Length: 171
Image (cartoon, rainbow, N blue to C red):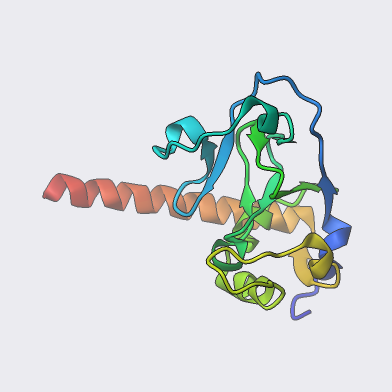
């Protein structure tokens, strides 16, 4: 580790799998999208039908859970900012302790390359099992350092949005 405040962790020290299928049909069905992350299927614009019986096999996704999905080998692991249910083919991951930088790290091209090497299959959606990632190590700083980095990214996002609006107004 190049930075003394950063420590290597096995991914299984940071995340655990959860699989709660005990729900009524009151939850929104979620979809994972390339550009918008996890969204309500009804907002996705794609009409995918699922039988009532199959929906009861869907897994509950809580706010702040992550979804390891068939496009993770290409798009990373997505964090959910909404509660709902998703297909049982997805793996739901939950943080064991708070890590502010995980959503950024899981979309980082270097991380995606590393999990791509763990994927199996040759079709469009490759399979990545969480168990195949158990020895994967990621470096994370202490929470105070994560907060500083997250604030930096938030400020950069604000500046980018201001510049986008300025460009839009100039047109």
